[in-house]
Length: 114
Length: 116
Image 1 (tube, rainbow over the protein chains, first blue to last red):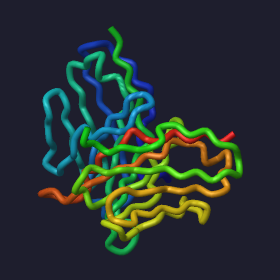
Image 2: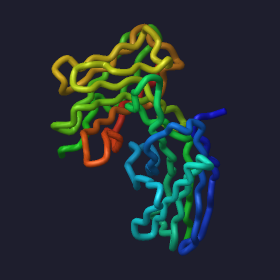
Image 3: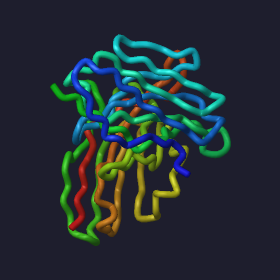
């Protein structure tokens, strides 16, 4: 089982649609959670951190369910510029007390069309 | 530009050759990370430094791979005796202590390695 699992998609949605991505992680001791966005042949960029209480940033809403080890990202009113790969990212212990590394999901491809 | 920089951006080499990549983190970021990404996959962790100390290495990092950060600023990643399976994007990231944690990492543009 992968440590962080995402549906790879692709998701093809029209402009203005609402789209949701889901992610599960295997290690219950995981500490921090993020969504990164990666454009084609570019580096990943932090989209938002995910907190237990849920958080919203404009059209983007992220939620965390620690009991189910589940993370979600909701994008409302999709724009053409939202087309990218969305990476679910978890900071999980790697033995001892080290929490240095990030563990990435495979990524979910989103294409927003006119 | 005060972001993470990497050099070179592209490297084509023949199997068996050695290659070295450089990463310059955001100034004052004391943590520096190396990841590798292949097509269709998310980045995979290789190693990270806090200042000049290498704190963790992935099992992915065979003994052909070595990373250094001698003065706690820039870092180099060397791959010896390259193999075709080493072809990937090598990403560097850096972070600093924030109000919450070290964990928000900022990535450089990557070095794309092609081994022929």
